[in-house]
Amino acid sequence: MKNCEYRQIEPQGLGTPNAAPPPPAGANDADTRAKRRRKWEVFPGKNRFYCDGRIMVARQSGVLPLTLGLIVLTSCLFFVFDCPFLVEHVTSCIPAIGGALFAFVIISLLQTSFRDPGILPRATADEAAYTEKQIDDSASSSYRPPPRTLEVIINQQVVKLKYCFTCKMFRPPRTSHCSLCDNCVERFDHHCPWVGNCVGKRNYRFFYAFIVSLSFLTAFIFGCVTTHLTLRSQGGKGLITAVQESPASALELIVCFFSVWSILGLSGFHTYLVASNLTTNEDIKGSWSGNSGVQNTVNPYSYNNIFANCCAVLCAPLPPSLIDRRGFLPTQESPPAAQPQVELPVFVGKSDLTVEDTCQDFALSCTG
Amino acid sequence: VRPSLQDLRQQASIAAKVFVQRDYTTGTICQFQTKFPSELETRIDKQQFEETIRTLNNLYAEAEKLGGRSYLEGCLACVTAYTIFLCMETHYEKVLKKIAKYIQEQNDKIYAPRGLLLTDPIERGLRVVEITIFEDQSNGRIEGR
Image: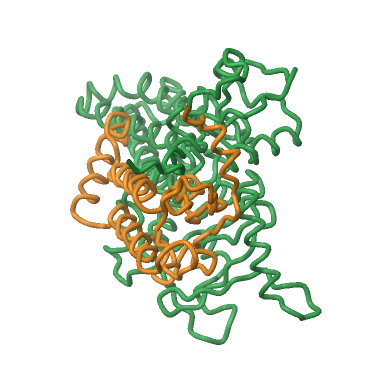
């Protein structure tokens, strides 16, 4: 019988996120099991996690409550003050449409804010060392410091990949490092303070759905409120009386008026980006518009077909989260003695570890 | 008495790790370079290695393929305001499971007997295929080749 020594090294055994390997015999089992921590607890980026790692936001999510508040408030005022009048005088479809739009807007917003935008996990210590060695080897005997860029050819276009000093790896194409969140994000579009998160590969479609549906909602409310006030002011009453009878409508009108232009503008801009398979980041930097060089640079990621680009950006299969925040850290062979382990309750942010502990734990978790 | 997993990890010490990088020539889809690393020359056939990487590349291409099925999934998801993903697994996730199984199979059949271990790229952020090279333990219990 083939007695292969190496067969016993189960690939899952070395730090698998999903299966929890049995704690090694001889260690203090009960303590280890009770103190198993999840990977989000040692995540090095500036993010906050809730619901035991299911929900994540950027550290500074200050304006998200404002966004939510404005949308909810305006919509509630609409349903309470304008809908009864409109149902009576126009049609009862109005609250139905409004309700559907409102639900879609809120769900898209939450999906954008709470999803992982496409964060790339930092390089493990081994990987970083290997990359450094490759860089040093390529420098050979030159006196200058070794170049920290890598050139690749994508669809006959030369693309320069930069080395990220924080994440210790060469950034894949279209990836950018967000300084607010301190993470490299794939297909980085921009960091949106209104949704309190970066917009990247994994949540761009939700962001797009959010701004498009919000433009419809804002325009819809604006139209309905205008109709409401117009109908009310007919019959010799005048606009002032109408507003006095329904002051909430005036407030909604002001909010919608000022937001509809900017949101419509943003939707239009992003529709252009989607149709040409560009990111805000690339558009702003002018990566493919030939500004930087003499040669004729073309976007190498575009399919040169509006329909194909839209499908690729909005309907492509949703890639999984690469940071595996709910996976367990592999049990350490010799658990550190007397390290205070706090059992974190839900709805609390990351535990208050020092920077060194966090980095060390994360490094250990990745090297298995 | 069979040694425990922990004993083996200590006994079978790691000689080196090789990282197979991503191949970006066709764009941002996940593909790995098929160039045979020099560190593996003494351990495994070039053909075998290339076959593994090529199969992995095909599987990843399948995961990210834009076709009727992915459009349907995207439209369905949009209509249900993406809440359908709470109860349904995405196409990508299904293929990732296939990939995990394939890697395990390759490890069991081909790589582990040669003292090598493939790490699923998903555990390294889909950036590299990490191949751990274990030191050759010539105590007569390994049947290699």
